[in-house]
Image 1 (cartoon, rainbow, N blue to C red):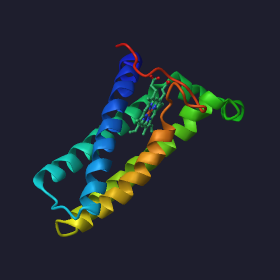
Image 2: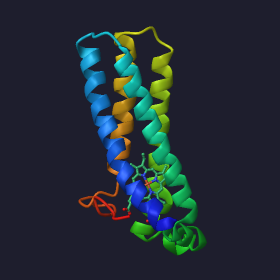
Image 3: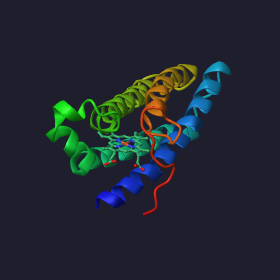
Image 4: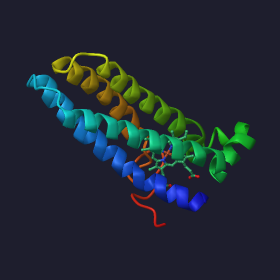
Length: 154
Ligand code: HEM
């Protein structure tokens, strides 16, 4: 179960990144070019929220069952000084939850506005904040914080 969810969480990360990059591109373009907010844009907004929430839920389950997090919680005093353990026990989880909340606020607020430039503007701003937080909290192979593989076999 743990190995499967870890591999799934690693894979779904790519869906989150792709959904956010496409969303950033379309919302900034829509805002700057004053485009109409169409059914396709609504669908993309729903998919981006759904993918991120799914990844968040997998992350929460992982948080509960991960031996890394269990070590962090049980040996807090020492573990908080170990960068990799602290990253998953504290930094990654809290930053990702923050990013997901930002993205959700953007989607919620944009739904309350009349279709058009204003919706793109709200989404572009909140998605940009969410993307920056989330991108730098992913344990990329090149990350100075903690490195994990780009893909994990199931
Ligand atoms: C959309 C947001 C998220 C993305 C893109 C993401 C991405 C990742 C990636 C790429 C890994 C490394 C997987 C591997 O070792 O191959 C990871 C690990 C982990 N994530 Fe997330 N994550 C997200 C949200 C969350 C959330 C919200 C939580 C918990 C509240 C969480 C908890 C964890 C834990 C506990 C691990 C490490 C498990 C272990 O090594 O034992 N993640 N995450």
